[in-house]
Length: 413
Image (cartoon, rainbow, N blue to C red):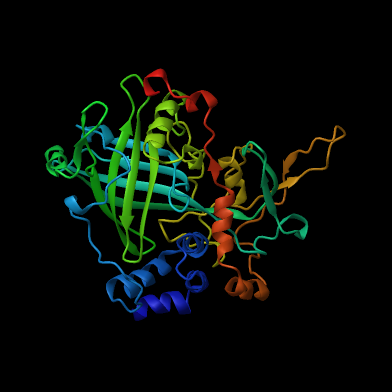
């Protein structure tokens, strides 16, 4: 792995800091996720893949790799949808509600499924964005004060500002759906409800293999609910998976629109409750970065190379967003999409005492004098690695379910 090591350790400060950050996490998955959001790039992915996956130079693998056999896949918390129509997955879906804060609550999540191939395969293009702290001291905040962010009570407006960016990710997976006949074959997975004697199955719906941060993962998917015929389309997905380092699980809801339709909320809430998942622990996924036509607000690519610690424009999987774009995502008034930095600062309090926000007129080119002071660079190696996921967690929005959604219908009592 000499080439990958040189590209990271000798030529890429962000990669070096990423290795240091993840090592200090001591196996804490949330902490590692935060480190990868802050420092992750293509060089770090390549080094991890070479040293952990391909050549096992770093002995951290404790699990056997490979997909689970159908009969060995872990049982989901609720029965899966019977006679599931594979073709109903085709097209673009937004993830609108998520359960696992480590994996399901990223911003700007969209999955696009191809038409069925080879009978039971769908190609999936995956998009998501991870918020990250930008380097302290680069760019200088207004009036040379450290920027800080605060959300209003409704989570929709900013007070002050913070050097926060988004890393855009795009990857590709092949999703293989298990046959309907196969899902009925496992006798230990098919049973009858005591109340109605209806036959239900806990068998896996689909499975996939992918790669994230240079490491392979294998997942089992279970469609445990979907919309009624008179409701907007949604799919409720529970999943469990593994890497060679750990196992994990979670759940999310797909919708054809950027937000979960209010008319579907009651059924989604009930599916989560019936599966033993507390609906109040679900997050609302911020998809405000998508326009109504499906295009992204921040699809303008930066042509100028930023400083070495602000991302790599040569990496097609990661785009950079200044805090102006984060403000758009959080619902603040849109601003121009120049390849530049801008910040929201607190304007002088008006006579009525009500605070207000204004955009700073200080917009700097990302290439203009972005060299950080040496003490900031040293500080990156000494920092508390947990601070990065803490920032991500602060931006997570808990799903707010209307009261009428929480009341079971007469048929469910």
